[in-house]
Length: 454
Image 1 (cartoon, rainbow, N blue to C red):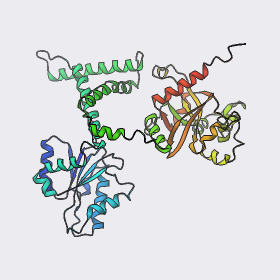
Image 2 (tube, one colour):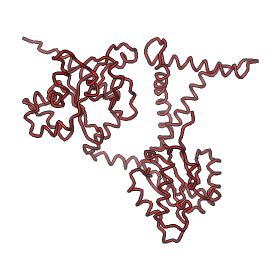
Image 3 (spheres, one colour):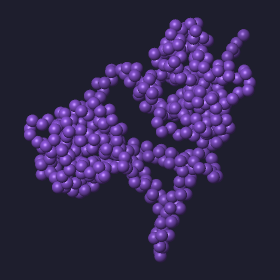
Image 4 (cartoon, one colour):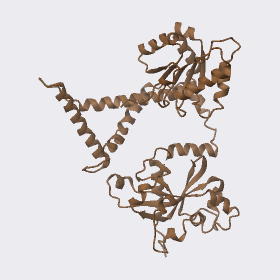
């Protein structure tokens, strides 16, 4: 129940020199972790995530050694303490040790950019340790110089704090509505058990509402309840953001000045992927929005009917790609290069309500491909010089550092038993907004009236 993170980390091989700083952090109720930096037994078993401020002594038991050795030791310590994908953090550096000729800070900035595994800080602030210990306000003054009202990172870090505060407020509200009234002569153990029972009851009803049905034995009950709690969490977060965010006019004007700066294709694909697709930690259980590699699914299936679609095309990329090229890709000059890049996929498009109410009997999949952006123009290269109306083409997205278009063919829908997916892992997942857009497009295509006049 205790998370492995700390907002503030202090690393210094002389405890007495930072003792006052640690007391100040304690006094202000700021969570921190202190490491000596020379004893690896004290380091975390795994590097920490979510660090936002690192007080870092630049000489960790390396007095008298070369500048290169000092920096090498320093970088090794930081990598042991902070995870590579930690996110934005600030280093407050104490570098004044040896002769003034030693420019450790410049060397450090040079070396960390060469190491792709080093958790890159957003800024490094050089401080004099003695001044900080004698006057802690120096730290705030230095930070304000770097992160005044004109730095957007300050707003983002405040937003992170609002999110944490919103979770705190939500748990407080849930706890308050579950808390029983104390009765005369009641023991604390009885009171505690009653509190827990009331909380269980609320969680059950929250899950039942989320799932849209009466619940029997359901292993997803607690998952559904926790997911449902994100709705009031958003409300708490919105309240805090509106109440506490001070919109600086100069900063707002600075941001607005970017309105005419357009994303290039790679940037656009990255942002689309961030908001529209999940690519990490995807639940293995089959769910609406899951995207699978075509071959991963159909290699699990044997069709005895020779006319089966997936037997007919023999799982070839050419057979699938033809479905999206308006009939044939033989006319395309660089066909072999195209076929090396296309990735045939299947998207699960079951309506969310059928999923949560367990009304679906088989997986409902539509054939698609991750079509390489470098060949994007071929999607319109049929005899009619336009993309077939049965082909859906998304905005550009990224997969494995390549830019693709998500494309789907309305003529190719499949129903496959759930057992096929027991050992098949999705490669991506369409978030709700993208999935609904695709579902609506298919419903519009399916409901076309056709010829209505003579």
